[in-house]
Length: 498
Image 1 (cartoon, rainbow, N blue to C red):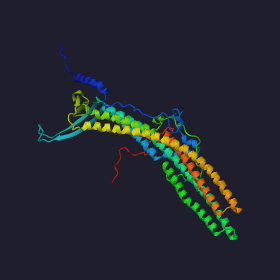
Image 2 (cartoon, helix red, strand yellow):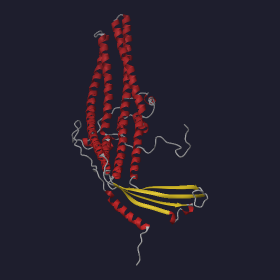
Image 3 (cartoon, rainbow, N blue to C red):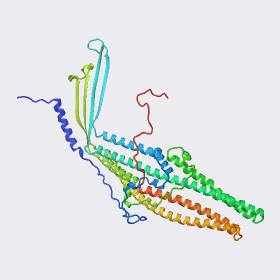
């Protein structure tokens, strides 16, 4: 009868079998599984055509090109490439991706290697041979550990990190959307300030000419000194508006420079020659309210953050359950380096470790409640983001429509005031009207034309706001892996002296 003996390999096989069984049940997870929450939304916009259909997001891309201004297009390109908020958003994506890789690493076994070499000498007083003994000891080995994710703590961590990557992607899209809207708005305001400055200068020049003619008539005895002083006062009042408008232009110019990631006056040469106020015909299709859930990156970001918060609950709840880890080690020890790999010098150990939470003063349960409260905060943030998006679209729709109506009336008023100014001069020259009528007509004309310019600026700004509210933004790929700061000499090198 042959007697069966247990070998080290048999022991390893037995523990491996136990490990496989444990890994088989490692597919479970505790905590709530995320499901996209339902949103109760109106079927149609209150300030858009009632027959609207769902909007294709592709139609929202590149909306600023509809303003027909190549300078604006160029500045948008420069801003996307150089804006510092965009650079930060790109870095957050790289951070989120690296965090996810860290989380995935926790699902895999950990293996560490070590080695040592010791040279020692024992004195004759402690040596059995009565003489000094010098010896060497060499050791090498590996330590391995693997945490069995029985209740899904690490799995939930990877899930949360994955949602975090999605949220970071949406954060970049939201940053680009805001950036392009800010560039278009500031560019419009800069062009508007230039147009208002030009109008004020033309009007002031005309009023100075009126003053010159009035003083000539005063010299000739056909006008009073009062008329001459009134003409001078009106011209000076118009000229006084120019410095304020120039300051407004400079502020818009400086903001554009900052948005492109350059010096405040970097775009002075590009805008200095002047240009028309950008304007777009028509209104972008608004689709239906449910489109904001798909097209608005801030809403999508809030939804991903809610998913991330939900996964964190399971991660916290898994800490309430036992955890099992498999650990193992293999080492070799020898007096000579050539003996390290011999069978007689090799030792090993392998076995599971069980950890069971018994008493922690409610700390672990409180951590679950913290995660649940944070999930509720994320849920409220998502619902608020949706409502804010709906409000943005409704406000922009009504503001754009009403401002265009207002601009039409102001244009008609400016035309009438222009004719009134012409007639007042003619009547004054014929003696049928007073000089005060001429001044009043010129003052009213300047006010009407300046108000019309402001309305055109507002209309374009509302057009920009509507496209932002609908979720229109950058529609080209964005490189995020390239680091903005490139470190050099990061390997081992002499330390700097302090």
